[in-house]
Length: 153
Image (tube, rainbow, N blue to C red):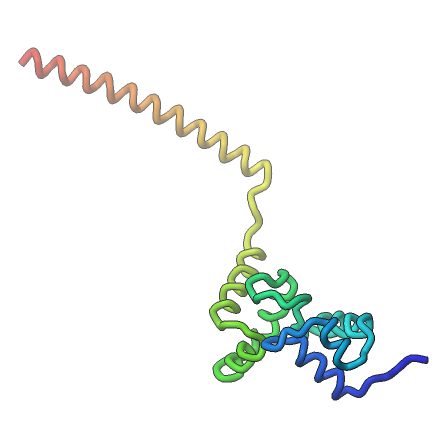
């Protein structure tokens, strides 16, 4: 028979898994008597709902990209005291969120050059190198001629 748990108990488990508590699934299962797979299932469901529950008790800088993105998305609409409360609850700093947001924006920026663009850039680079060599030879000839004319004077 499937056991159903009260929403208050689920919320308590969520709070215990979240920062600053960082309790492991095994610790929570031992103290509450809830099966480990059930808690993992809840955590997976919470992550799908974008409720920030990192997969482990790692420091925020060691979170997975998905967890960082979820934090950025959740904090996007917050400002001021709400953002501060959000960060304190999850053990984050606003600077971390801003940095993660910038990384996400940069990752979705203009794509890297494709092969055709790279070939065109290499061709232009070779052309500029040839032109530079030619100009250096002309400069050497003119300096030599200037030196000869200065010697004759």
